[in-house]
Length: 83
Image (cartoon, rainbow, N blue to C red; front, side, top):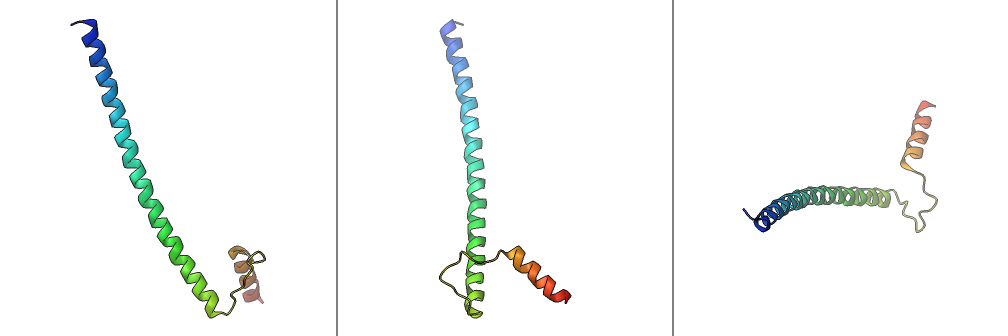
């Protein structure tokens, strides 16, 4: 075999490895995208539920800067139940 043919063969092997890596990356990105879309759907569903509950409770406010976190509200509810 000539040096040129060995170089071509070696380069083809490198390209095969690179193609395999690209295919793995593509599969991983597809999986990540699927998870992202699922989480986005869940987020939007939860957001709709919360806005619905808020509207039912007549607590819709224009500014949301002074809202308490869920954890703080939960702690307040637990403290009231303890009384």
